[in-house]
Amino acid sequence: MKVRELTPAVGAEISDLDINLMTGGEFDRVVEAWDNHGGLLFRNQNLSNDAFVAFASRFGELEAAPVMENGRTPVPGYPEIYVVSNVIGSDGKPIGSLGAGEAVWHTDMSYLENPPDASMLYALELPPAGGDTWLAGMSAAYEGLPDDLKEKISGKRIKHDGTFNSGGFRRAGVEVREDPRESIGAYHPIVCAHPRTGRPALYLGRRRLAYVEGLELPESEALLDELWEHATKSEFVFAHKWRVGDLLVWDNRATLHRRDPFDAKARRIMHRTQIKGATAPNAV
Ligand code: SIN
Image 1: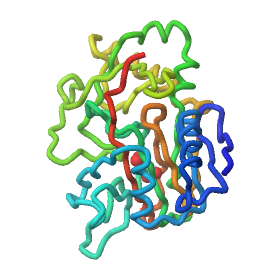
Image 2: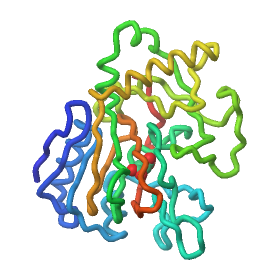
Image 3: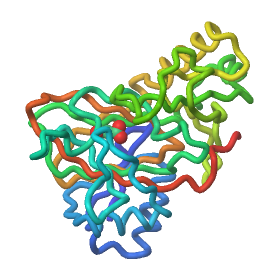
Image 4: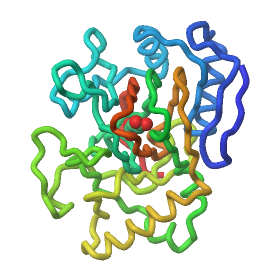
């Protein structure tokens, strides 16, 4: 097995590894690479649903997949697999979530007290163009902050909104509030320490309806805009062009991700699993 850095800020490609045949020693090296790079790309995999769930389970206990936008539960027999897809099923409803539009920068489910530690996406069917998934490295972004901004956010927390998903869809049963201080969500430190490496990282969640605790709203908005502009600069970002059989694993404590839109008439089917949060995100 080989590990190749994809960008200095985030991502490594693991090659010469068939996940179906992975040994314990190889898995240890995978975790080490994951801690060093925040995101991992495995090409040319051939994962059944059982093998996908078994691989994900090696990282920790799995989250039950959230109820999808179509109100359905996910893949029959696999409650941990969530379907990200725009494909319309025989009943006229999408078989998965997030449609074909852009999914804006975010980290998964940070509106929970214990958000998932990691997420992984496996490509089953892809459009001819578009639908690239981007990662941004939040440890590098934190390290690259000017000192005055580091000072400004030290000890502060963000409220992470749970009203909308990254595709802009309102979550089932949630009432929309215009004031972020009144919407549902959880507070987390802006700078979190990775539980294994201790490396500090920006933990921003998503921009929409976010709020910096203790600030007046306009002040909070201005600080969030400044942080988001910095965190998503090209120097911290890797854009992944998918091939069928690719598996992308990211650490929600060290990365943000987003997705490009694609032609709604084309088909894209991805399976996702998530590792439960072992702890709430910790302040440095
Ligand atoms: C997501 O935001 O979790 C989905 C990313 C993708 O569809 O590539």
